[in-house]
Amino acid sequence: MGAPPGYRPSAWVHLLHQLPRADFQLRPVPSGFAPQEQEYQQALLLVAALAGLGLGLSLIFIAVYLIRFCCCRPPEPPGAKSPPPGGGCVTWSCIAALLVGCAGIGIGFYGNSETSDGVSQLSSALLHANHTLSAIDHLVSETVERLGEAVRTELTTLEEVLAQRTELVAAARGARRQAEAVAQQLQELAFWRGVPLSPLQVAEDVSFVEEYRWLAYVLLLLLELLVCLFTLLGLAKQSKWLVIVMTVMSLLVLVLSWGSMGLEAATAVGLSDFCSSPDTYILNLTQEETGLSSDILSYYFLCNQAVSNPFQQRLTLSQRALANIHSQLQGLEREAVPQFPSAQKPLLSLEETLNVTEGNFHQLVALLHCRGLHKDYSAALRGLCEDALEGLLFLLLFSLLSAGALATALCSLPRAWALFPPRNPSASCSGSHLSEPLFPARLETGPPPRSFPGCRRRPH
Image (cartoon, rainbow, N blue to C red; front, top):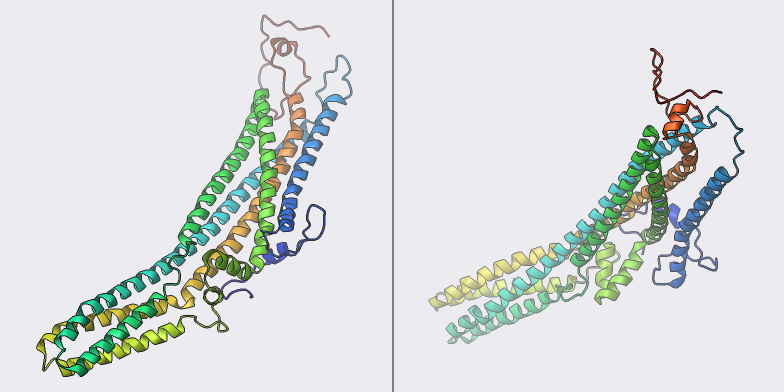
């Protein structure tokens, strides 16, 4: 089918589409978008499972590091007064983790905004297409109703008035047949009437899913921000309970980051397969859901010279019938009104109905052209395959940076804990220097601190 005018697959789509895919038995799977096939589903699940493997490896690495740090440290000699080494390394490790985490948060907010913009563009295009289809249905209904009313009232009255002139009655009956033919042809133009698939319902479903997706990512970003704040507070105040809270939150956000990374990777790969050649899948799916002919769907989804307008014949016949009705009414006005003055009123009413019908007909010709609906189709593809896909890739980068920053912070916590000063009175009165602040205070000059009566200097 080829890509439609107004949309071209981006470089990211081409790059992701070229990635190899395999099922659970590691057999190659074609990269064509086929979500209904089991092998393709397994390929996407395998992509998501890579994030689960990364989570398992990171947890194993953190556990091994903590066990080694806690159980394999050499014992300190008795009476040692030097602080444990590694304070500067802990400080810089925490600072680096915080900087990476903050960068990830900024990238996450940008990616979430891009994804939301793409989905909003998709919903707007669906709503505009629904408005076009509704306008076609409304114009057809209004025109057919006006013509039916004219046949039942004005033309019937006109035949009764002209009953004495057989040729004039024949002309009025000819106009009746032409009006009925136009109404029959126009009814066939409302091609979306009675179709179970509504673009409005699809737009509402997309907006519903996007609302919860946006909320989930905002909560994840806020959790990441809270982890950064608790880390800063815990290190600045040297509070062990804040470090405990930070540890629990870090583990939670680490699991959520890897989980979101798996969903984002699988979604990005599947979306790239769809966006590489969307026409075939969209045509088959829409035909299956709506039951419309492939000629109509191809005309609006492709909108090129190779596909002719499937309504052109009906439009031509309707235009000719309206022109014939107009000519017959003008002939009746010239011949009948001088002899039958009472025929002037129904003739004027018929002229007014004919003018409204012709105006509606020109609007229908414009709405039934493929330009409008195809423009909405291209806008929907651009929103989904450009902005939304780019936002997903930024969210994937956010999850990766968050996982790395959290793993680094979790590995730095034991050393930070060891550098915190003891919180008991005996330790503060003993004058021991086994622990030093992680962030040293500013040096001040002045008299030496006073000794408290309750504290005695222990002999060395």
